[in-house]
Length: 151
Image (cartoon, rainbow, N blue to C red):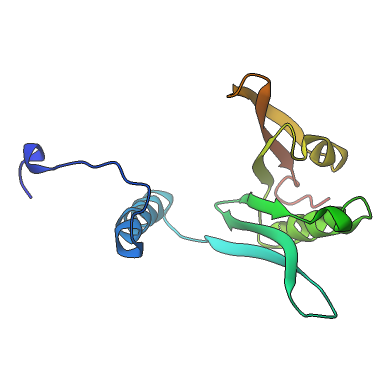
């Protein structure tokens, strides 16, 4: 393709896996070339019901370039407020430290868990009002440790 005018663009809510891979793989290759290395790895912690062996919740994230990114964290109502969420988050943070991460980031809505994260030592980096009026998204961060001085 030699001429940018030949490119068409489309809006879609359902790209297929191969279309997503073009973007994901292209960005990964660019980032790896700029950083000089690649250390991106999934970091997932699953909460399993011992009776049924089914997954009931957990944390999905990844580590890359010294940063833990928590993408999704869910526990059903009956498993909240008993320390399980704190243990899962601490487990993710500890694994991230072992991988050399010094910071962590996530986003959460006001009706989700900003108070929970604040109790775990996270800080609000940004607060963005959302729609409908009265809804707020929090971008949060936590310093895990300085290189060479694990906490």
